Image 1 (cartoon, rainbow, N blue to C red):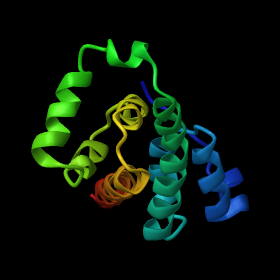
Image 2: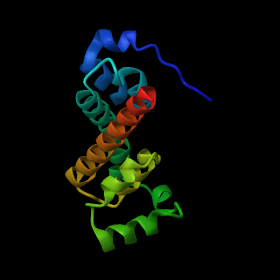
Image 3: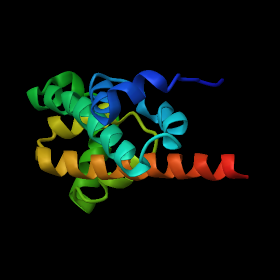
Image 4: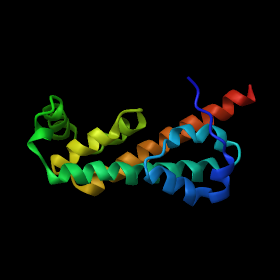
Length: 143
């Protein structure tokens, strides 16, 4: 399965448009390849990561409200043990991976993790992932 995006509308609205698109739940990962050769990859990755971070923050806020339904998820105790053992700093490794970070944010909000400790590693990880995708794509088309 391939997803093809016409980069022209995104070029028209620039980095701010990409940020807004991803803030509203857009799939920025698929924008990186077609835009990486037309825009500054560093700024593109940053706009995408920040937008995705804002979008994932909604799940953190929902988790902050708390619910017994969240606690009954089978993997919540594992996340809690992970936080107790390693702290929040390795969370950026999880955000590098293409995981459903919304679900992770929901649980981290429920467990009371400070927003800054949630947001910063998540955005850094997504930024690294977007750079890897962009540089990887540029390398592949250069072959």
